[in-house]
Image (cartoon, rainbow, N blue to C red; front, top):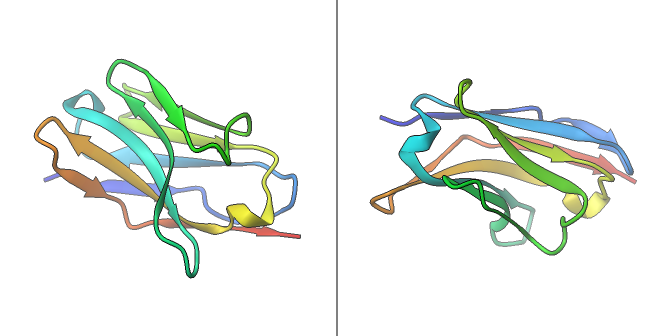
Length: 116
């Protein structure tokens, strides 16, 4: 069974930076893609960034140029480096892994709060 554990969420001021980590219980090359989503109060969960097995990345327009997704295969971990944070980035951030059979796995979420 796949377990994803996120960490790194915190309270930070506008313009600050955070790095989120998502550690998988299984080898991440076993997934078709891994990514980060976020849920803000009153809003639907949205895709923030995703990285495929081949290394191709994709970002939400709202975070392009500020966020970077990366991975460490040996550590079975995916990261989300978040710079120039804005209050509208405040949300619970969830790690997601998509299997080659289209199964979705989710972490428990980590809270990011950006104060103005």
